[in-house]
Image (cartoon, rainbow, N blue to C red; front, side):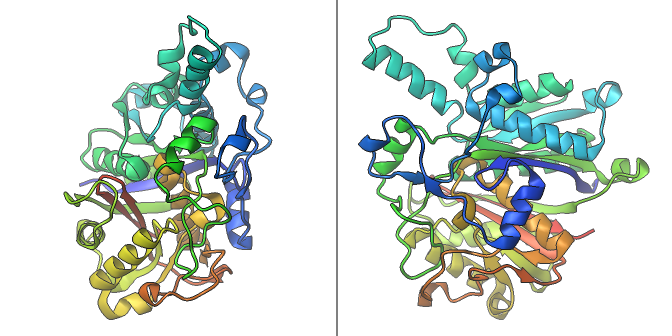
Length: 402
């Protein structure tokens, strides 16, 4: 089986428009959640989010491209450009046939849906733009990435709610490990911060009106975010032979289904995904130093996730660090696991653990080291990234320091 490493990373999110800025925000424990700047905000009860401010698509794309690109695609392309640039790969020759794209997104072109429903139902228009379907389809970002970088290998999108990015990255990992491809662009993106996107989530009654406080006793719900993160996954020998800088090794992956409830998480399902990732990576639980938690800030998720970690790791659970960066950038739904993977890479490469900010009161049901409010220096050899989605779909990645 081939080894798989990460040789490039790119992002845009509420904290920054690139990786260095995002990592700096993690170090500072800076909050990117703010008051929303969207149309008809006054009709919403939820008026905060991890919004990407100062976004100017015309600075990155021409007008013909903007007609084709929903915001989630725009974010994906910007992140991918940063990742490919860092990797140093050129896909013009044979490598283009040996590289593909697999991305996660839960909603796809939600902004396009919202704009066109408004045009038809509110404004009474009888026609929409002929490119509405290719703009809103979930695979739009993956397809445009393949075209921009001349990638002719397997390319597709994964939609598994909040686990979409982790499932996508897990699939990319398996394809390289099996020898199917040499490299993959992978990660995820989401942009649901529009009137219709937020109004739909309001109906679930899981949203906070003031802040995201994962694991804190006084938490009162999740906060939506938007953005993207894209990575270059590459076969280890291929990367080594060309002298590439390796950010981390993807060592294992596991996914499970709760088969229980459409919205309530299962401790057993989460625990099986965590232990499965360790088993796949052939890593002992005691070697794990950091877990980037799913950590949504809802009572159901946080206590279930902590219980699953305690079950899998036993006494070692009290010695490992677990934090939720959603407290800073919000919950990017299908794109969230991709942005959160950056915190795992930072822990492994830089020995710096991103904090859980907004933490105010200890919760006896979340009695783990959640790295409250302040980043921490620590040597980490193995990190996990958890994603547990509505529908009971769980996906966990294991990363190793190289």
